[in-house]
Length: 170
Image: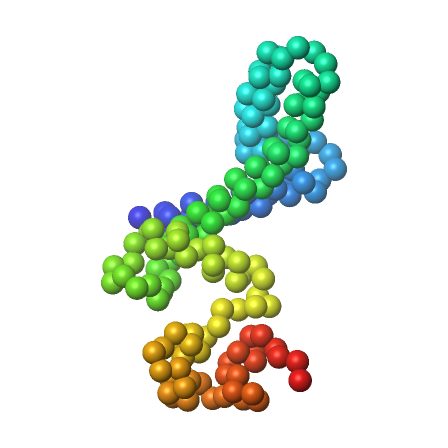
């Protein structure tokens, strides 16, 4: 079951990335049998234009129709993002990657909840998450004792692990 989830997640990621590349970047029309963006635009345009047909021809109708392009593109980007998050959670769950979650039994819901965090960290690795020991130092009850026990402090009492993540100007 987990192997199947991993394969489906990889297929979803490849499909969404290909569809987004063909829709946004390619300057020519792509002829494929199944495209998510084509399905999306045909179904949403039918609903959007059916409401416009009920309006009287004129400026109000044209104004209403002019909102379709920008709103549909934003909504399509959201759909792509949601599918990518779901696919990444499938891959993580399928491969059994370790999570440091508060619950003892890590379910697919845990992976789905945490996948946007890990996906954004993979896509933008310039700002990785702060190491766990520094987070524990700040959230502890006795900050100074926890800070001295878990992190070496640098200039100005700022933990060194933060310096690597968020450089502080001198």
